[in-house]
Length: 254
Length: 195
Image (cartoon, chains in turn cyan, yellow):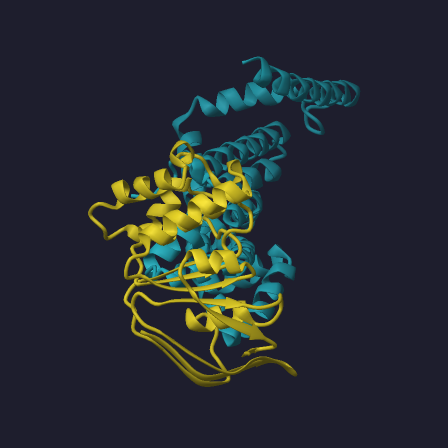
């Protein structure tokens, strides 16, 4: 309890400091249209959260982003397994992944708008941003397996399933977790950006776009705050699900 | 039966194995002795099928083969007991057998510990427990007693000598005493060939 409090206090102090800076700046500007105060944003957020539309909008956006992340995770793992087995596949795929990583997300969104429906587009864009990160990290994890352990497994004629369970997965999981940690923030931001540009119905992106359109700066801040809070929450929950510590029963011998 | 015939292997320009031949039947015991870097480990790797020779024939008819390498090669995310259990998944008495071997190798109290909680010598004994609990037809040992103090080494050697039975043994060692106490025929090995 004391240790967690010691960790919490500095974070709380920093948050309060920046809230005070925001509060002072808003007081100096003194125009809600340009810079609403933290209190005004909080009041607006509470008002928004009181309506069922807010939660449906949030749920639909989360669903889009998580679908994109899930698809990218599955595809990234499969591609990493393939490219670590076949040199040719790796040579073919690596430049493509570099290209995807280097291309501005807006270019993909505009291009994809021509080909895809506006409801599916944020899913695809999120997946596209997450895929190279998952692929690169899982590939590094597979390549980083200890060859001496694999030799030991070969001597004892462990089957593919046993090698996967006892050696490959525990070796790859720390890399996967690190990929997920960077990919979640990236995917979430890309997904919301795609929503802003494609304005699908019932989406946070559409709310942000409309707030800008009608100069509802306080609402814009409230929705942005919602995005930040959801990003933190989703990252916490998902990273907790992906355990890398195999010592507490997470993959023990049956 | 393990049989190596005219095995040749080079790493680049360096000839590591030159026309090496040996055969080992069930219950047979062979010790390779020679200076460091003479190719003993490479020969054991060829015998285990971990290294393909450039030429020559390798035939191994033994059903169950186990090995203790120079390093323990334990899974860091599994306890000592779980490491011993690893190759025993199909055995009905796996747990009892694994615990017996940990006990015999004076590791009963370390069964629930992870490799990084064990000393080098203890890790090596876990590796030996895994190899013996597997009930091998052929046991390959590559200088496995390095980290053990003299008294313990003698106790482990006696335990092995008493337990091997019909298990064939192929080992690499620098110690003639180890080879003799395990009842091995000694093959002197130098610069990739028997001398």
